[in-house]
Image 1 (cartoon, rainbow, N blue to C red):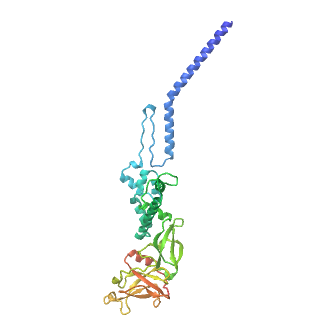
Image 2: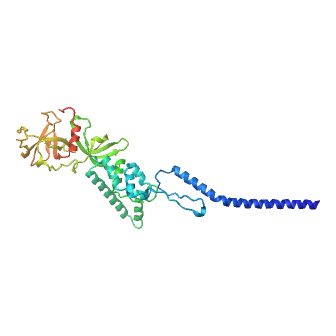
Image 3: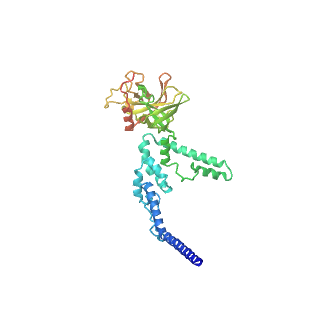
Length: 380
C-alpha cells in the first residue's frame, strides 16, 4: 500500500513538471511569434499618434516599419525642403511677416531661406515704405556699423582666450545655444526692429500742433518709434534745449524725411533759379533762434507788378520771388513772404519768426498729401 502511494505521488509530480515545462516552452514560442506583431502595432500606434499632432507641412522625416522586423524599410515622407525652389518660393511669398518669422525658427535650412531679402522687401515696402526713406535706412546701417565696432572694441580690450568667449557670447541666445548667424544688414532684422519699436528712425510729423488750424500745413523733424500696442507712433525732438515727446501719432501724420538737413541747420536752397509761379514748395520756419526749424507748405506766387497772365508773366526771370501761404486770409501777416532769388539766406525777426531754406516739391503724392489736409476754413 505504501509502495502504491509512493508510485502515484511520483507519477503526479512527474506529470506536473512535464506540464510546466511544456507550458513554459509554449509560452516562449508564443512570445517569439507575437513579437513582430506587437512591434508593428506599436509602430503604427506611434505614427498615427504623431500624425494627429503634427502640422500639415512635414518638417521631420518619421520612419515607418514593415510587418517583419528582419525586413525593416524606412519610408521617407516628403519634406517642404524637397519641393522645387519655385514651388517653395511661391509658398513662402504667401506668408505674413509673423508666419515667415515662425517658419524661419523651424530649422537651419528653412531659416537660411526665410531670411532672404526677396521675401521681406515687399513686406517692408507695404507697411513701412511711406514712412521709411533712404535717410532712415542709412541711419539703420550706421547703427549696425556702430554696434559692430563696439563689439570688436570690447573683444580687443580683453586678453588671452577671453576674446574668443566674448565673440562666442555674441552668438548665444537666451537659452545658451548657438544660433545661426543672420546678416544684420538684411531687411528682416530691420523690419523686426521697426515692428518692435526698438529702432528710432528719422522722419517728419505733419500737422505739428495736431488740430491747430494755423499749423496744419506744417511738419517738424523728429525721431520716430512705432508702438505696436496702439498701432501709432511716438516722436521725440528737442526744443529750446529740452527733450520733448509726442505720443499716439497716427499713421496719416507720418512721412519719411525729405532732406538730409538737420532740424537746427539751414537747408541749402538749390532750387531758387528754377522757381516760377505755380510751383509747390516747402520752406523752413522757426519761432526764434533757439527753436528747430519746421517745414511749411506754400506756392510760388506772382509779383505785385504782374497781372498773373501766363503769356506776359516775367516773374520767373525776376530776382524777387513771392511765396504764398493761401491757407491764410489776404492781408494777413502770414499770407506771403518775399525772398531774394540770388542771395537768399535766413530772413526774419524775433516777432514773426525766421524763414530758412526752400525745397521745391515735384512729387505729386506729396502735393496731394498737403491738399488732402487743407484747412476747412481760412486762417486769420
